[in-house]
View 1 (cartoon, one colour):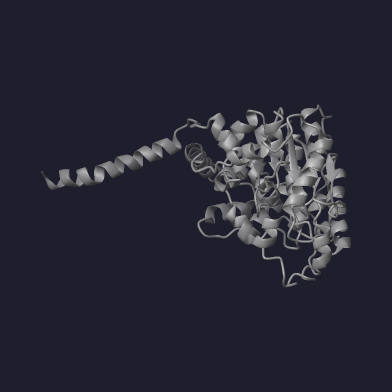
View 2: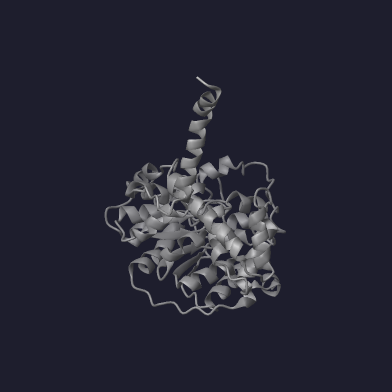
Length: 414
């Protein structure tokens, strides 16, 4: 066998494989292998690859799932969790949980780019956590952890460099994004931040990149999705056959009493011991300097509202409380928390977002919270009192009127 033939036998298969991969990733076709089972698992997975992708969520939302957007509160899957109630009582909707610990407004804004068509003239539920509104907003580490090249590329191809909202989004991206491996993205973002539209060459490059990223998403996003359906199914067994809010509220109190026996703060036993909150007094007064009412997060939140406005999405916003007994112990200012909730509701209602469930004053109710900051048994029942009718009954078409003032430093610091 000649040397050339030997080399071809060694290198040929590698070259052919590379060509095949390039053809698959650049082909003008759509690969979609998601099934109803995959959608069901993905909807409660809170998986990073599902959050950073689009295809499975797009299909699920078209099949009747509803975006439930937030952060770590959705991870507490007790019997009153929205996903459990929806399945137990065979609701006309199923929550698709979008968010986990570390996801805040800016991540959600870019996340929405992949499902714009699926939320157009539809409904969504959004939990706004007061803890997001620290002075600097989302941390660089958290933003980079959930960075999605797919969603960012989708945004770049539709961005309008002449608008204040897109210029603001680009500036925030640049401020938070690590530059390793993202040079072309950052250069494009800088153009938009400066009010300059992408060139024809830029657009063609990003279109090609988008095709590749979309095919990667279609081919691989369904792999390794955590299956939490057994947990959901197990929790449904704790509920009565017939839906009744008063009965569920009583039952939630029983679950809460049983689950908070090792502390005086109404905190779930496992959280209390797992976070080592007991015994030392080391947390006493430690949150006295925390501030949630002056933050860049208010303007990041405005980006999300602007996207909902563009798509005419009718959204129910939920403003949760914090555990009052714990906040008094740690010195978290009650006045500051009140100001935070006031600013959030003002920003919403002044622009036509009228569906707001403000629970900020209910942090002292027994078993309303599961721990220091997350909704618990009775809290989820209170949420369902708003969620169920909002999603199952016809709602008036929203009339939004956006105000760029909410991107200003004056509003952030007011």
